[in-house]
Length: 362
Image (tube, rainbow, N blue to C red; front, side, top):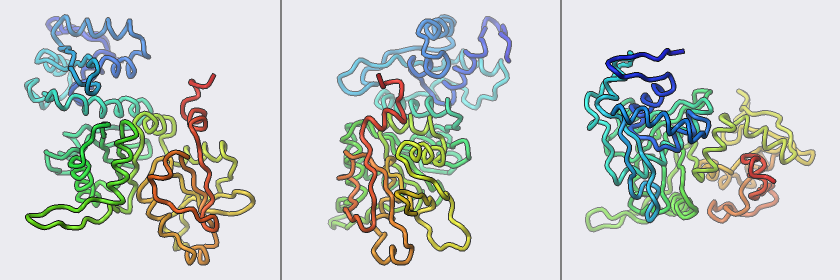
C-alpha cells in the first residue's frame, strides 16, 4: 500500500493516485464515474478527494454542456493539469505525455468519451482490462481517425474492440463503424457495440442486415451485410455493462441462464472429432439434446449461423436449436419461426431484472 508522500506540496493518497492514473489513461472522468469506481458511491468522500486535488491545481474540473446528451445538464468532468502530470512523475509513474494539451478532448467528443468511460469503469471493477482509443490504435496500428472507443479484455484474456453509439447516431456514423469493423476484424476479431436507447440499437441492426447502397463517384454500389465470423455483439449500454460485469465469461452467463430457465448444460466446447463449428454449447431441455444459442447480446454472427441452420443441417446434426432472446427484440434479428428447427425461450424485463438487477426487485 502506497504511503502519502510530500513532493513540493504534491500530497496524494493511494486512492487519489489511482484517480490521477485513470485521468492520465482515460483523459477525463466524471464525478459519478470516480465515485462509482473508487468511493463506493459515497458523495462525501469523492467530493472531498476531488476538492483536495483541485485546490492544489493537480486537476481541473468543468461542467461540459451536452456531455449527458442534447438538452441535459452537463456532467462535471475532471482532467489532469501540468501539476497533475508532474505529480504522477514524482510518484514514479512513467509519463509519455508532457503537456495537458496532449490529453485534450474536444467538447463535441466529451459525451462519447463519457459513454466509453462508463464501460471502462464498470468492467474494470469486475476484473476486465480496458484500453482507451489511443492505446488500441497505437497497438494495432489503426487509423487515428477511427471511431473505435477502445479494447476490452475479459479475465480469461478474450479481447473485444468496442464502440459506443448515442441515441442520435447518424447513418454516416453507422456506415463508418461497420466499415472499420470489416477492415479490422482479421486483427481484432471480436467487437461489442454499446447502444444508448432503442433507436440506435434498431439502426445498427437494420444497417447490419440491410445496408444502403454506397455512392462511389456517380455510381451506387450494393453493400454486403456485415459478417466477421467472430463475436459481433450489439447491446444496450446499461444492460450490457451489467451483464459483462456480473458474468465476465460466457460460461458463467450460460450457467446462470440454465439455472433460471431450467435446462442442463452438457458441453460447452466443440470436440476434435466433431465438424460443427457454429454452436459449441450442447444442452438438455425437455429430455432432448439441443444446441444452445444466447441472443440476449444480439450477436450478429450467431444470428447468421441460426439463419443458415437448415432442415438439412438438422438431419445431419440431429439437434434443434434452443435460443434465448428478449421478447421485444426479436423483430430486429430477422430469425424466422420454425418450431421444427428452433425452440425459443423468450425473456422479458422481469427475467432480466432477476438475473442482472436483483436490487430493483421489491
